[in-house]
Length: 290
Ligand code: GLU
Image 1 (spheres, helix red, strand yellow):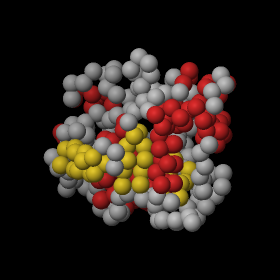
Image 2 (cartoon, helix red, strand yellow):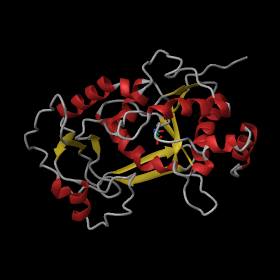
Image 3 (spheres, helix red, strand yellow):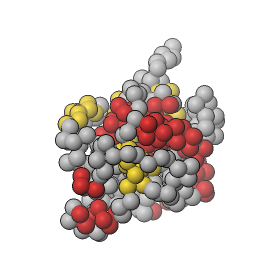
Image 4 (cartoon, protein in one colour):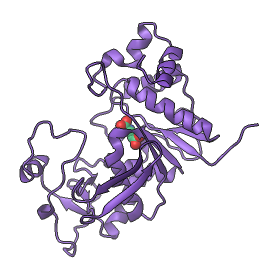
């Protein structure tokens, strides 16, 4: 008998390149956890960042996932009660959340460049972790009681979330156990909306996970710091956060983390070389790459 639970998990790939083994393993774990809980798995297409995503990657991404044997019950290809499942079609949700953060004074406009920030904290411009935000210097933020400029219809300034000063945040990760971070030290005032009028990953992800009733987020351990940022957004927006399971990252044979530039380990390439989904999944189950 199928045991239907209220567990709702999600796969949230970004169409910025071909999926590689690391993504595939994370998505496979997400599916296994949804299955074990007798719950639902949804597919969300994280195509909000139009400067980085490519339309042709969307189809190949879904096809790669299906080839590997993954399936979902709601998604851009299937529809469902929380449609649309393409982030590019969900701007109104993010904009409403931004309005709420603005009305409650959680955000401020910032005209400093990334270079200003890196200089102020004495960090090298290169290698500062392109996928992570440097800690925003406190002296750059306007005082909490400064009058807040209005949100323009078209946004042309970066808006940042004002993180509390030195608060210890803790969450219990289902894979790694208790995780801790101190606000303002481990991460600072982070972007919620960019000056090119694009919501940040943090905001879009949190708004969608909340709106789509996700009960457990399964994703790569590279996003643990983002989880702390998103927990602050849940709190500011009065939403209950899901549980989190972060998957260990996969390295290549030189010990470097897999990235979309590793075409040799993309599902496409493996498939062309005749590797079967079964052998890939067998590798995940035993912890070794295919
Ligand atoms: N779309 C994000 C990515 O591919 C992951 C989002 C998430 O799982 O929270 O990196």
